[in-house]
Length: 119
Image (cartoon, rainbow, N blue to C red; front, side):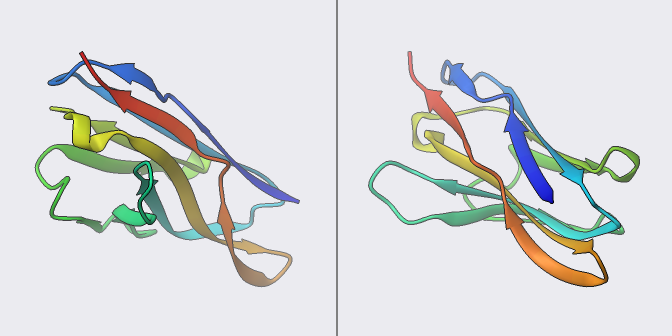
């Protein structure tokens, strides 16, 4: 009923930029907090950035000052602008959101998009 679909991953050179998008579709009444998680190869998944419904943001120390999370509530979409990318940013990136659907608040995950930073 509700799907999160990420796009925008790929290959970037060190120092480069990428912009990820994640759109919610289906029976979406409203979206509370939205998050970007990332999972480097062989490591655990970790939260990279969070944005609340009203636009308050929070970042992991490892991405603070380089990544910017934003959202377009009219489009049910969250973005992650990634600047000054480094090889340590190589990971699968996942969108996560708390979504009101059918009178119930549930947590949803996207399928993930791969980001590789390499020269």
